[in-house]
Image (cartoon, rainbow, N blue to C red; front, side):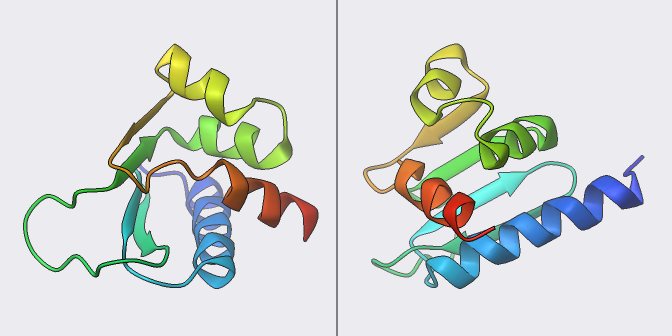
Length: 99
């Protein structure tokens, strides 16, 4: 079951990512809450995208708050990132600075 408070928070963060880096090059997934495409580069339209970032909502919140570092979360498996454009560390830093 999806918690509405968590859902709202996830959607807000994903909107901030999309606003900060519009585009369709990377798919960011926070199951079971939401997914977006963001980032400049080739647009993905069908099948499995070449650049995917997936994490739990709790990881998204900690990353956005600066409680965990991107590299550490990827290394520990909290973030699954694949593709040459999937390093979103600078994007999370950017939205942290504007919040």
